[in-house]
Amino acid sequence: MMQLGELIRSIMPSLQLPAPASVIGNTDPVVRQMLAVLASAADELVRRYPYTRRLVDGKWIKPLAAAATDTATLDTDNILFDTPVIRAAVKWRWQEANGFDYSEAFRQCEEALSRV
Image 1: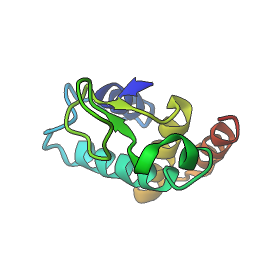
Image 2 (image 1 turned 90 degrees about the vertical axis):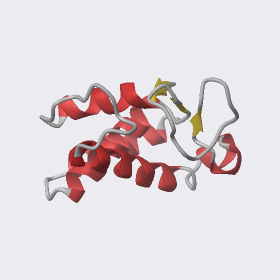
Image 3 (image 1 turned 180 degrees about the horizontal axis):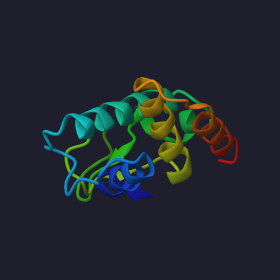
Image 4 (image 1 turned 120 degrees about the vertical axis):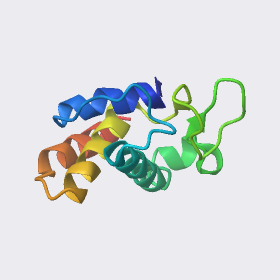
């Protein structure tokens, strides 16, 4: 399980983007787009096996001191998806949204999902 801020900060340099100091509340358009891509990836993944069985009511974020939810509020919120799956899902969606070739990241996502 990985924290939201840590996930985004680990993905951005792999896409040749500077890692932000913080994610939630950041006004940088690229960081905001990354959060939107994360939400889009999560929306799809909660409807796919095995997550349809593992995540109750589509709740994929676990704040440190609260019940699971589907809305991130802090960089320290834990993401309940397997890290390789959500990392690859965010990468391919960001690449697609920005007109880059996303075939390898998509393949990695599907491969990671098949191992869950």
